[in-house]
Image (tube, rainbow, N blue to C red):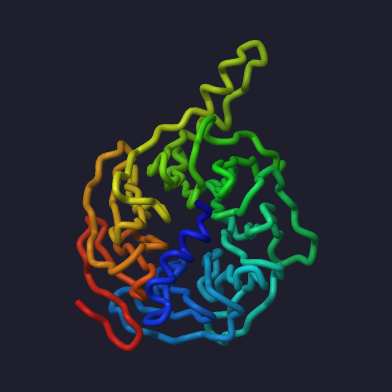
Length: 336
């Protein structure tokens, strides 16, 4: 099932009562948590839960958010299904909106490279576009996916780029050439809803979910830098191997790694209304309960002391790295 369709199913139950939150991002300085819903951004103080300000006038449902090196502006992917989509850069101080990309359907994914030089976008047209920030040059187009782009991510050192798609693949590209080097895994039967690199850069995690598999798959990135011997046909297949971590009742909708922690654990947003805290080895450290519906998005603060989650219930929840619920953010109130 396509990631955007998964979101639509969750929206239906609550559309008349509350606005789903489908994007989250902490600022690089850790002083702001930005949440995105329908045509607006909410800026929160993650240490107190106080609502700092609202920014409206976006074009549709926010699907993804990304900060570059600058805490003063944020990239937003949004849109209206089947009608229009956009990627914009929003100044969080003034509310000014700068158009980056316009589309005929929703934009679903956005990410900055660690050095802020590149902005990657993805949407329903199956093409990943790489923009050189601060220039007017045409974007590099990465083609190969055959369905919606659900997520994009850069490795911490900026040398690798990953894209996930409803076409049931995650693809890995080298950023010095923008050439695809791997399609992962060799066999997969479900769409990819999210991709994320570990802080150490040694692991790529991607979420897959559907009738045949509900899992977080792990790939070791060392394979990307291994010289492939053409006389050994099985070598490439070996380098493409991934390890599935079964998530059981949880259809994984989002995944990220906790920041500022050695061998950081994964945080997974789930369809069973929980947030899972999973060690890279596969064991579940904690399960956070409290959301009233599917959890679409998760994020970690730069210092690793705060984990945020949000979804169809319209609430943003703040957790400790150990999975303890600290408080819930709902517009107009903060609940312990």
